[in-house]
Structure formats: C-alpha cells, structure tokens
Image (cartoon, rainbow over all chains, first blue to last red; front, side, top):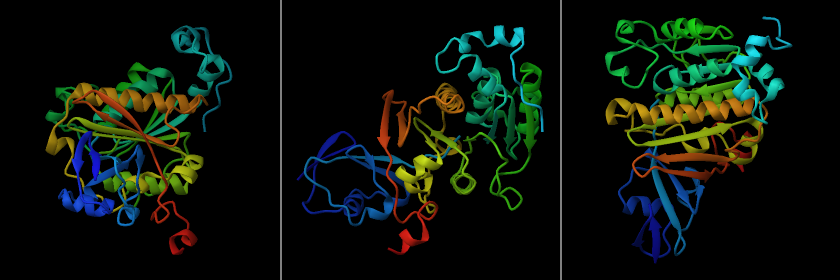
Length: 66
Length: 260
C-alpha cells in the first residue's frame, strides 16, 4: 500500500503498525516524534496503530537544543 | 512582594504606545504586563532573546534560571553577551544588562540547573518559559509546571529543525503535556553543540516563544491551543501539528488511566 512519508510516496507492506513501519525504516523510536495525518501520535500507541493506505506520516527528530 | 502598579506614568504610556495600540493589549494589558512575573529556564540562545523581548515589552519581573557560563562559541547567537563576558555566569550578565536597559523590569537570578535536587520547584509566576537545551531539564520542567499548574511555553531548536508549544492545565487535560510528545526515555542526537545552529533561526524561534507568552499574559486567544508548531528552516516551512494526550503518560495521565 502507499504511504506518504515525510512528503514522499512510498510503497510499504499492508497491515503494518507504526512501530513496524519505523523498524522497516531503521529509525530509533525514542529519538523522534511521529505525526499521522497531522496528529502527533503518542509513542505508547505506535505498536497498536495500523497504517492505512494513503496515510501521511511525518517523522521529526526529537530536538532539544536551546 | 512589590506593590502592584495600578496606573501607567506618562513616560510608560509613551514608551509602550505601539503595543498599547494593539486591540489585545491596550492600557489595561500593559498594566498586566508590568505586574506580570515570567520565569525563564535557560538563558542561552533562546532564553537571552526571550528575556530581552519580555523585558522590553514591559514584563515587570523576570526570574532567570541557568547554571551555565558564557562561552566564545555562544556569541554569534547569544547577542546579549560579548567577548568580555566569556567565563561569567549567564544569568548574572543577563540580569545586569536587562536592568541597565529596561528600568521597569526587576530581575531575579538562580545559578543552578533546573531539575537539580534544590531546584525541583518553580517560583510562583504567571508563565514559565522553557528555553533549556536538554530533555532532562525539559522533562523536569514539564513535571513541575504540571504539578504546580503553571503555564509552560516550551521551544527547542537544533540545526534547521525547531518546535514550539504551550502547555496549560486546561490544554493538557485535552491534548496532553510535553511527555505525551516526547516521553522520558527520549534520546536526542540533535543539539546545537552537536549539529550546529544559525543565530537568525534561534532568534526567530525565541521571538515566536516570547510572542506566545506575551499573548498568554494579555489574555489573548492562544495561537497554539492543543498544537505544536514544527519549523523546518531548510524549507522555511511552518506546520501546526495537533497534539494528543497519551493515556499512559508518565506525567499527566492519572494513576487510574495508567492501570486501565
């Protein structure tokens, strides 16, 4: 199925969770925030949240500098 | 306890006239600012800009909290400091400069990192600004401000990425706290020290952070209710993201919710 990840269309396996998506992208889950269709999704629900076709997924780094 | 200011002097009226003209400020709003107390945690890149903007706007009392000293590589973005300040405590230099420039502003200083054993509680204030540079301090502030029910305006930047959010008790009840976005085990490889940052970008984020705080103090409608602003300076893209409460949040979820 197609997802829009950080603005770029990508084909991924169907029936995957956000957690599996991150693993497939080799992204360390505790170093990012994840936005699904404009909503920041809490990390505790990534392993149960299914990606749906054409979901817009935005991943941004956990920035802490000041 | 200082006596509340109940009327503007002629000089104050002239000095703040451009912001008094604004419908969300007015004379009453300016009095509110002159009687307001803001706590700024971190007076590095973000904090020293925020402190200048709040003091210049007439915020009557600032408490600056930071244990750090001025370093040479701070100077391109921390424009309150200069070469002769290298090695001096940032809060002391900042307080001295602010007192010289802004006679309406009283400045208190704390030379300790927030989150240290003696720095777990925030002073009673009207707003708290998180201008720190690490998640340990940011999480300590998120916990303290939630427990003490103090509004928190938090911002961060590294390289070309930044974010800004405001957390109030009402807002947290619906949309969650900082921990809901970045839980306590969050690791970052993105800091100004490791990834660099441009002073102009830091000043932009600090200005937005100060604006959010000033509007809150004035009782104006929040521009970021339930949201987090993400900024990508590389694409000059500003995106408002909807926040959502984590039912398992270690900070703001009730014990009942955590067990359910």
